[in-house]
Image 1: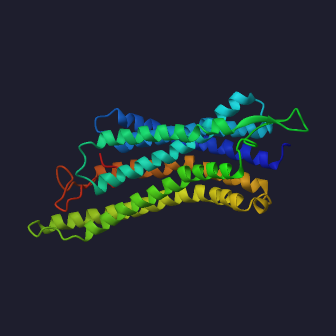
Image 2: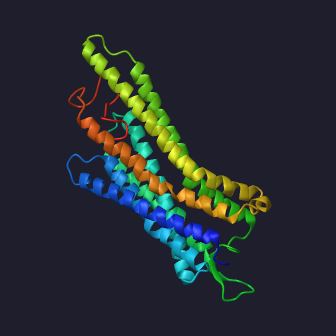
Image 3: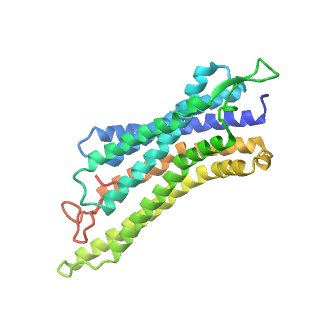
Amino acid sequence: MRFNSGHILAIVFYSVLMVLSAIGNLTVLIVTWRRRRKANSSRINTMLMHLAIADLLVTFILMPIEIIWAATVAWWAGDTVCRIASFFRTFGLYQSSFVLVCISLDRYFAVLKPMRFSDVDRRSKMMLICAWLGSVICSFPQMLVFKVQRHPNITFYEQCITINSFPSEAHELTYSLFGMIMMYAFPLTVIIFSYTSILTEICKKSRAPIEEHFSDSFRRSSLGFFERARSRTLKMTIVIFLAFFICWTPYHIMAFWYWIDKKTAKGVDQRIQRGLFLFACTNSSINPIVYGAFNFRNKHSSQSRGRLGTNNTCTTGIRLPPLPLNPN
């Protein structure tokens, strides 16, 4: 109820994070928007643009709310703004996680199901629509459970909280578990499954024998391509997994601890608890580095490499994009 070191930590951290996230995501948004206007724009550019928009929602809505809220300590904006702000505090986070799912599934289908490209654009649009609708649906309950309540003894102190919003602790636990599953467990599972499948497929194709009637130079080029693709995919998979896992896991471990043993969890320093959520929000700043760097760097390097055919397809049955992350 009083301004303390925890509030100072939140203000400083969110301010720095907001600047870094704004620079990174605005850069990705501008680059992808320019590419989208060109004829050779790829689906991954569109998805990266949606990811940047989602992370910018976190940057310019969630972070300023947290900064102002930490500075004022109490909630000064009234009940309506409390409910709207609670919706947008999670909307950007859900949207960012769901777009990561879309990117992972798009890469999965591009590499493992290359013959199903007839409806690929429609599928990509449907996935993005589902991501936006899913974010709205998952965030809407926030407007119902958060409300402004006045302190029973210090009547001038009001806060935007969820106390007494649930019929029982079981209902509150169910709601919290739903948020953890949709924002963390589900995206993490899809990311692991998709990129592990892609890496497995590339490793399998790299070991498959190439038809004997092809020249030695073609065989060496094909094997070299698969080795490069496997190496890039392995690096990309590790970075994507670690970025999402490291940012979000500590926060959800703390949340899970609170659910199973509330008494001991409350004994953890409030600055640590606040810091875990702050750390989770860094994922919005890391996303443009991870996805933008891999996509943009490899796009330029792919233009300087020779091609294996006019349509980038070899007789092993797998489509050969310039890199697994960025097939047009």
